[in-house]
Image: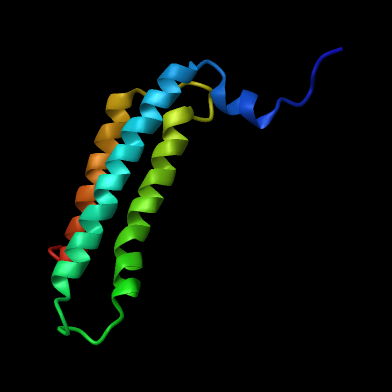
Length: 111
């Protein structure tokens, strides 16, 4: 009898080795840990001791949310697209780089 429903794991990880998946996830986790600390540092350097009356936690969350969105997009693109073909790592890194630059330009209001 033909199996009609594939499990979620089979759909996501078909045609990709666990070593390749671990390597990609490791690279992205290091990238986003770095971006997390960078955004926290930028937020704390913008608002020095007593320089702003706004809560710093709200600013930190505001600076981190775009990177969480970028991470979700990258993980979606990293596994495979809707036709079952995986994107190359180079395309993913270029997409991440462009999105991060655009987010920082929007943050600095340079447009």
